[in-house]
Amino acid sequence: MGNITCHVRITITYRPLLIVLRTLRKYWASVYTTTLPMIIVPIILELKDKFAKCIYTIALMTGLWCFDSIPHTMISLLPQLIFPLSGILDSKSTAACYFNETNLLNVATMIIAVAVENSELHKRLALLLMMICRCNVQLIHLFLMLIAMVISMFVCNLSTVIVMMPVVKAILVELDMNGVTSYFKSVYKMEEVHSESSLLPQDVSVITEPPSKLMVKSAYKFSNDVQFEEISLLDHTRPSSITTCFYLSVGFAATLGGIGSVTGSPTNHVLIGSFPKIILFNNNNIIIIIDYLQTTFPDNRLNFAKWFLIGSPIMLTSTLVVALFMQISFLGLLKPKSSKSKRMKSNANVIEAVRVKLRSLPSVTFKELMSFLAFLIAAVLMFFRNPIFVEGWITLFSRNFIGDSTVAMAVVLFLFSVPAIEETLGLLRMESAKTVYDPLITWQQVQKKLLWTSVFVIGCSYAIAEAVSYSGLRGMIAEEITGYLEDHDGRTFNVCFVVTLILTIFIDGAPVLDILLPIFTTLCSRFTCDPIEITMAMTLVSSYSFLLQIGNPVNAIVCGYAKIPSRHLLLIGSFVTFLVAGITLIMFPLLYRIVHS
Image 1 (tube, helix red, strand yellow):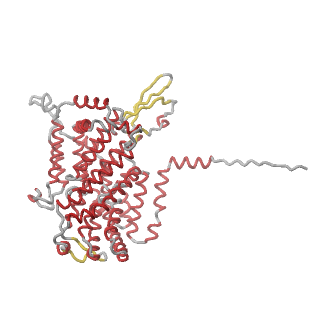
Image 2 (cartoon, rainbow, N blue to C red; image 1 turned 90 degrees about the vertical axis):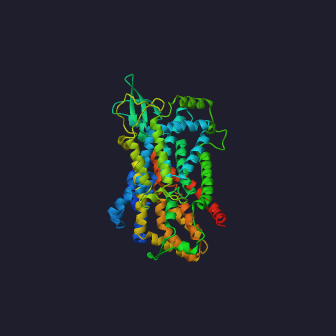
Image 3 (cartoon, rainbow, N blue to C red; image 1 turned 120 degrees about the vertical axis):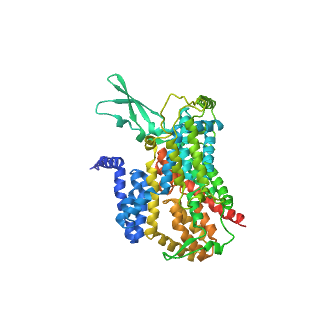
């Protein structure tokens, strides 16, 4: 008999698996948010110390931040929930961190920026810059970074980036209107406009206006009639790659500009304010306050000139390298034959369109003049409040009572007091038809455009810094660094560099220095290192927070203004951090020895 072959067909259905995957894709944010706290619980179980709860909170917030699973405002408020429950900080102390002087300066500067935007001064400046650069996108990008860098040398980098945002937006919108690039891209889903009736979307076009005015015009075909409906697209858009490049680049340049001079960054003020007296710690106990630096290195003092000679070359080199990286990544640099690179070059039609628009503008209005004057007054008063090289005007008052927020609030009062006269300077007359004028800015305008998320993000950073001190995490860091250096003598600079760079990812630079300066000065006295070299280098590094919003108020402002997802900031910021840290490691020791030789 012949062999009998039997074929058995086994059918495996993937439908249940597909249903599960589709469900997870649809509700991934909820699943991720609820499971992440349980996944990282081993941090507390393994360490079993009070500071483990602080590490747990930082890890939880970082995980939520990277994937934008819940709103950033809610993530920023988590310390107010976790720290009191875990016994690290009481609710009163935690809440006080959310509205400190830095946040008041943030709010006041944003009000000044709103006044500049309402006067439409930013559009005039944007058109002028485009004409200077002949509408070459790569050149415009470089000029914006250099302008932000220079201003940040003399004005707080947070104030600089807030005022620069409207100018960047005006340039990008103008480029979009001339077809050079797109300002925002739509991630709008067609099925979301389906109603219960059988309305079929036929065409969707996005009008690229500023984010607060984004609308979509959808044409529907129903019963052979075309109906038009306007639907808000604010939550259905994402910045284009060019938009992301411009906004992040200006933020990076403003941050780097702060290291060029003593007055440029709050972290620099922290270091200068700590000299000559620094609290030294030993086994978590304050043992003595001594004039350590003056006794040990009497001729090795910091001043404005020395800081500028050391910091400005690092600042300029880092800014140019970051500009080169961003242009290669986003603007088609080094690829002259690509379509993107060709669109970035000067175009005669675009230049003519911008020239016509610039000529059509009226002469400078009273509102524009007053808005510019307000910013100029704020910049001059902040710079000369307490400079290192001359006596500041603060000596006329109680020296420790007046900060930058006081200056900014005085300028805000000026904006709310001056009338918003519409006529140009050439046509301004006493017999104007209008009898009552609104001020240059109203509170309704402030409420509409204020980025409250950035306020909570900055407060969150200070709450974490406070928790690091009270939870014993600072003492643990000091013990680990000391133990490592005892076995690896001669690596003090590199170890302090890496520790500062890691901590500044999660905490703003000024609180980082408050935590680490006592540790570093103790290490310098123990391992016979130059304390000024170590502390100045770490002060520069404490500004290199480019990865998360929580680590740098500038990041929070930029991402909030342009709706940049946190994962994009994390990815791009990782490369920028690597580049800038490498430049500092190479240049700083050399420059320091040349200046102090």
